[in-house]
Image (cartoon, rainbow, N blue to C red; front, side, top):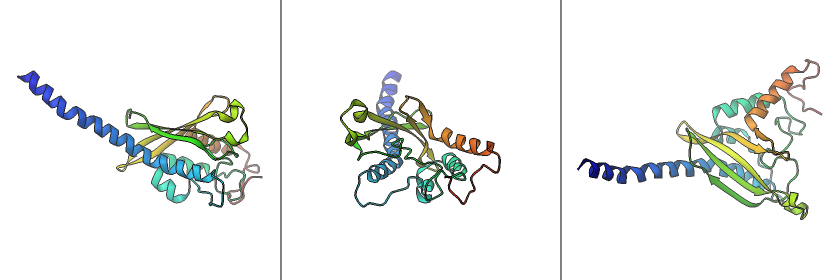
Length: 196
């Protein structure tokens, strides 16, 4: 009788726990989809305005507190760009300053592990540059999504560069701060002036 009761409980609760994981995996896609939609739009060509994936509203809504703190620290040392606010002088999602309209974009959430759901985005970014295999290669970006204050937020963005090196955007932002703090004060860029 106990075995039947245990089996009945499993039959009821196992689908509920699986659907909870599915729901959290689906929820994890929402901030990633916003970032990827902006990136697709940015490289689509045409007259649309560039969408900053780290503007104040997106930082508040899409990213974890830890990510935002690291971004704001790195933003004290803007890269060479005309707005003078970004710590990056390249698109961190496509991994460069040039890309074609993105092709074959797929966003797939993985099974949540230890409070983090990895959402994998793949796309082709260079197809308009030629037919060589390098131009047809698929780029993979992994977003680590966590729950914070009851909503899914991006805690890190993991990319793979052309040399096959895996890079954490949070680690890159920390490195920007470390490198700038190690410069003699007369060489450190002024906060109100972009680097040349």
